[in-house]
Amino acid sequence: MTTSKYMNRKAKLLTVFILSFVAWSCKTDKLVSNKHLAPNLPEQYRDQGKASQENNIGSIPWRDFFKDRVLQSLIDSAIQHNLDMQLALKNIEASQLSLRQAKANYLPSAQLQIRGNSTNPSNNSMNGLSLGQFLKQHHVEDYTASVGVSWEADLWGKIKNQNAAALASYLQTEEAKKVIQTQLIAQVAQGYYQLLMLYQLRDIAQQNLQLSDTTLRIVKQQYEVGDITLLALEQVDAQRLSAAALIPDFEQQIRLQENAIQILSGRLPAEIKTQEQLVNVRFPEDLATGVPADLLSHRPDVKQAELAVTASQAYQKSAKARMYPSLVISAEAGVNAFKASNWFNLPGSLFGAITGSITQPIFQRRELKTQYELARIEQEKNVMIFKQKVIAAAGEVSDALVSIQKLKEKQQITLDRTNRLKEATKHANLLFETGMATYLEVITAQSNILQSELELAQVKKAELSAVVDLYRSLGGGWSNN
Image 1 (spheres, one colour):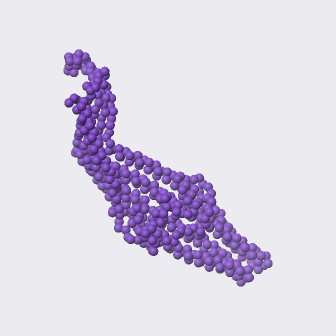
Image 2: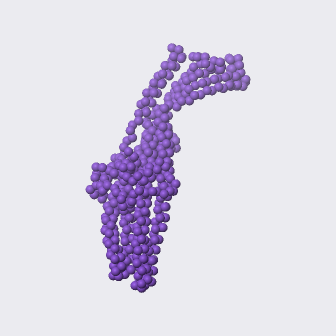
Image 3: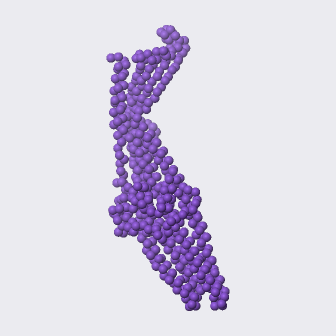
């Protein structure tokens, strides 16, 4: 068998062996779920009441949950242009590159080398005397062109676990984007309802100012005919000015709130033309929350923490595998000649080499063991963080549920009180016009109705914010479908 045929046969066998081993090593298992590490969750949330456990408002796309077209436009702009969202997308791009690099670790590394050297030893040295005696010259040239391939067999799963860790890290960045989106949608919605409340507060102040103008006009008429004193006129006028002072304050807050929402949505400060009134905003009465176990799949921050556990487990296994022997297979083939003219004189100039080495780390100043222990500790920490996230998520849902329940009760009480005060104000005005009530009773009634209407608007806004918070705490906001 000629040298070239022998080398071709060995090269083919080596290629088949390497490809077979790579195919076996590159089997990618699905990431193992760590939901079993979560704390035991109850069958329902505290203060869940009779809400449906089969459905979950967290699974409703945000476009279907928020019906207001203006609010939808603001949310859509925030998702597209908010800088936190843009940073999250860049993190995903970077993580994708890391994942591709991790997958490339399965492949052999290849290098093309072209070398040429000329050696001129001393004429009085053994090499120089040998060259002069046998080659009849005093220098030697050597020209080589070769391709070298080196590949590490993943015997202990080191590369496989590095790949699993990279995949988990990539998925973490995906979940991080969802976390930012759910928080961003909740912030825009709550800011929008705050703006609607400020509009309503301004309208209430303007209506109260008109009522105060009417009262002041009557008091002036009575003062002119001598029925009441100057003191009464001054006090009624002061009451009117107090109502008037609220209007510029609310208008200032409206401008600031519009600016804040526009900036959050990635826009420059500008007016927001609302089409809805606060009193007309409605959500379904049955705010289905599902069961607490749904948090493990619906909450992106919980999923992110679970993936952190998966990544740390893979890092730990990879760190442990680095303490075991590594098998590296190398091959080099090319052409070599003492004269450049004979470089491509085939097959005489062909050469090849195949080597395999097993390396066992023995003494590296505890570096490998320390890395493994640190990875183990990090994995235990991530398990604790995962449990903490689950407990906190369940707590947020319960907080939102009790807030909605109690704010509804408070809203009904405040509404009843406001209606009573409206009637009282009408009666006070009628009695004052007929001289059966004093001006103090009138301005007291007007002040009471003003405060009650302002409080009613604030309670309504607080209830809407609690509903938005419930939607977010159930994992709502990252699905657009």
